[in-house]
Amino acid sequence: MKPNDDIVLSVDGLRTEFRTDDGTLRAVDGVSFSLARGRVLALVGESGCGKTVTAYSILRLIRPPGHLAAGSIVLRPRDGEPVDLASLGDESRALRAIRGRRVAMIFQEPMSALSPVHTVGDQINEVLLLHTGVNRSEARRRTVAMLRRVGIPSPEERAGQYPHEMSGGMRQRAVIAMALVCRPEVLIADEPTTALDVTIQAQILHLIKELQTENGSSVLFITHDLGVVAQMADEVAVMYLGRIVESGPVREVLKNPRHPYTAGLLASRPGTSAGRHLPVIAGNVPSLHAIPSGCPFHPRCAHRESGRCDTGPAPSLREISPRHHSACLRAEEISGGAL
Image (tube, rainbow, N blue to C red; front, side, top):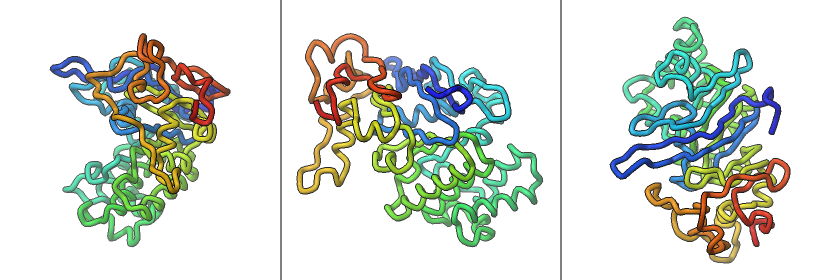
């Protein structure tokens, strides 16, 4: 663990629940991690594992029937006192001052993030007017400069366009411009290239990395793609059914996974089984209505031990090697992902 001076965001024991007619569903279950200044932490896992709910919880965007049930989300700004976002009211002035200014988000689907009835320029202008106090003339100047910086041609003209008048790649660049125009200390990127073709995806990833380095921002990068993790991240945390099951330096985790779920994700990447059938992880992520006892991954794990992996509480994360943690009971037996 790094000294607190090097940590910009600390999430500890985060639990997010949704009340339903069939009972309370725990979508995020005791998640803890730290994001270091100027670094990129990737949050990885299949759909339904709680990655996006974790991101929305950090920004306090969870709405009923969901609620933050436990945990702390401590932001340590460069020029202020630490603040626990979990302790702030959902619509408090303090939270609104942080959201978009100190912590910003690139959403997965730009058409959902952008208002269809306002021009792109007006929407970015509003972020500046809300958080920086500049006048409209200066806001427009900064907006056009930011659109130019993210690679949008003819930014003066594009600023006057509506989202539907732009291509998918252009809209995603506009969302990135909106997220970064106030130079936030923490940027959350939620699957920012999912709907884009491979060429545009590579351009967007390069742009995010370039702007992150330029601004000195810290990034929580949410993805299901371990190839992107290898390209973008310094640290990685692997999520399964709302829990972190493995975490550590990205090169160490990808080279020497110590949880069968991580090993399965790595083995199922395209290009890893040239000339052979691509292996897949058996089964699917279970419903939150039916979380297995013991290790939640055990029904899909080829290395489970009856009477050990399928009973009792879920295993906790523990350090296997320096800064490398796993929640597998057999972690010490795993080498390079194989027993």
